[in-house]
Each structure stands twice: as C-alpha cells, then as structure tokens.
Length: 465
Image (cartoon, rainbow, N blue to C red):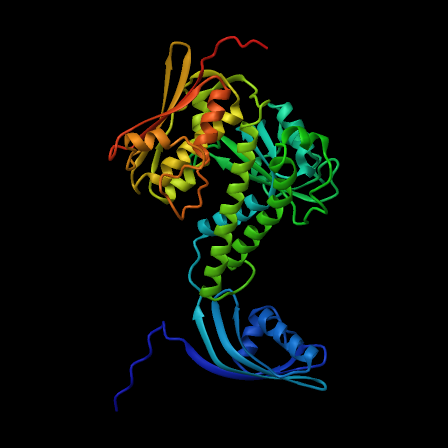
C-alpha cells in the first residue's frame, strides 16, 4: 500500500469548531481548535473571550438579538487564523459555529522595519520637534501646535542648554539629562499644558558609533481640546493666515489620521487582511502628501511676507551638512544610496540662520534622493571663496537641460512630475531663504550628468546688529 504524500507546509489546515457563551459573553465551552486559540491568546474556559474579532462579533449579535455570519481574522503571535463564524443569540448567551478554519504561520517580521514604522507613527503625532547636539543640548526647536509654541520659543531662544531644562520628568530625581536611552519614551510634563506628553529621541549618526546628535519629538496620546485659541507666542512665530490659523487646526488631525493609518497598516493594532492593509497604506501616503503641502504653503507665506527676515548667527556649514546627511541617512540606505558628507573635523564657518540652512539642505538632499538612481552616490562638498561660504549638493540623477534649469526655481514648478506628492514649492522657498540670508541658491547641470545645487551664504564676517 502506497502512503499518500504529505501536503506541503504552505497548505493551510481546515477545521471547524462549536462553542457557547453565557449572557455575559464569557466563553463557557469550545471545541478545538478554538479552545487552543483562546488559551494561547491568554484566555480561559470558562472566561472572557480573548480573541478580539470573535468577542466583537458575539457582543454585536447578542446586543442586536440577530444571527450574525461573517469572516473573522485572529492571531496568537505564531499563527494567523481565518474562519467563517456563525453566531446565534439565545436567552442565556450565544451558540457559535466556526467553519473553514485556516491557519498559517505568521511571516517573520523584520525588527528594524517594525521599529521604523513605530518611529514613523511617533513623528506623525509629534507636536514639537527639536534638534539636539551629542550632549542633548538644544540646537533649535519648532512647535506644530499652539499648545507647545511657548515651549518651542523658550527652547529656541536658549540654544545650547539641555532640553530637559525646559520640561519636567515625573518620578526622576537624577541629574539631567540622563542617558538618551533612558529618556527615549519617557513621560514628560510641560508647563502650561494639562496633557501628558511622551519624548522620543532618535540618534543621528552612523550605526554602531556614538550619536552625533538627536532628533527630539514630543507627542501626546490625548488630542488637544482646541487648536484655535489665541496664543501671543504662536502669533509671533506663525505666518499670518495659513501658519497662524489654518495650519495648526489642520496639522494635528491630519497627523493623527496618518498615525492611525500607519498603525493599521503595520498590524500593530491586530490582524488585518492584506487588502485592507494596502488601503491603510494609501490613506497614510495621501495624508503625508497633504501635510507636506500644508507645511510648504505655511513656509511660502512666511518667506513672501514683506517683513520676513532671518536670524543670522555664526554657524559651521560642515556641521549643518553632516546633520542633514544624518537625518536623511535611513532613507538613503533604504535605496542603497551613499551620502558622502563632510568628514568629522572638516569645518566651514559662515553667518546664517542654522535652522534655515538646515531646511534648505534637507530639501536639496531630499530632492537628490528622489532623482538619484538606486546604488548611486550623493556628494555634499564645501567651498570658501572671497568671503562667501558654499555648500554643493551633487547627485547622479538624470540632470536638467537649460530650459529646465531656468524654470526649476519657479513657484509650483514640478518639471512635469506627477504622482510624487510634491508641491513644486521646495526649491522656490529654498532660494527665497538663501537670498534672505544674504546668499543665493543656483543649479549647474546637464542632461545625463546629474545636478549640482549650490547654496551660498556669507562667510564668517562680523555681523552688524
């Protein structure tokens, strides 16, 4: 007698099960394999239903007094289960029949990818972003909500002090700042705000080496009661209409939509079919494009204001370039692109506003990453000539012909691109910022030979105040 071959491991097993609940939606009897899933999910028999999708369906059937038939999806940490459930409500509970039970091993998740997705969620809901040096001292800070505008203003006006000087860390009596790993995820209290806040610290630099600096994000799990209240500090740092009135009202709900969509897409909130995970990814992408457009329109209104000016200071262009490369390093590595930034110890003094120079360089390097082919290289070079300091961002992308070079800095100019969510404002705003700092932004390119964008600012000369 010939023994039939075993089914390959990828073929799911098919089972059915009968179960019963009481009037309090407790599972009082269950066949295998439902019984095993209930136990693996931390439940018991008799006991509360530990399978979220089944608990929801039973509760709805009993509340409505109607028979319900639907598919459910569940997981126990090792397997993903799908089944067809039919629930018949009775006087003392519900009768449950599960059919077409299929189980598959869960795919092995990349821990680094999970960490990146969780960080993306934290960034989206953050209402304050600050840049810190290697000792956690503030380099600059910016608020995304009026509630934290005063905190951002205090931090930005006292650069060089530890960020922990501006907030309270409940339950911590140790000298601040602590090691960054102890502060990452720590609860913090903000003067003037009743909401609980959480700090997220992201090290910047090469993996395996000591951080060259940090990105700090403050976010809250509780939404603000209102974003429209008057705030004199916010009024000073926001633009006239979009920045002060519309942007704060829109930014937080859109950011929460993105964060929730990312949570759903990543299945952090529970199992989900691939189709609906893709829908959530589309929602998150659309939200990110909308948020970027709001930010661009806010910056546009700022730079086009008659009284717009920058806050010149003595900065090191090499350090700003290294920080821009560090911030975009993960995105570059995902595409196999190497960013060749100025080496540690290399320096180029200049007179400009640190935050605005960083904003311009992030735009230039971000554009280079968008157009550079995978596996290529992006160079950030420094030049000092005749009292001027220059940063050159060069890529190996398709380049620009003379007609494109004449149009690339125009407002809303996207050079025929579509589908990338860009507003066509980044280079226009960057050039306005460069000229407001007493410099300029130019391009040198040729089709098939990449592009070289050159940011020029005054060298380190005495500044009249």
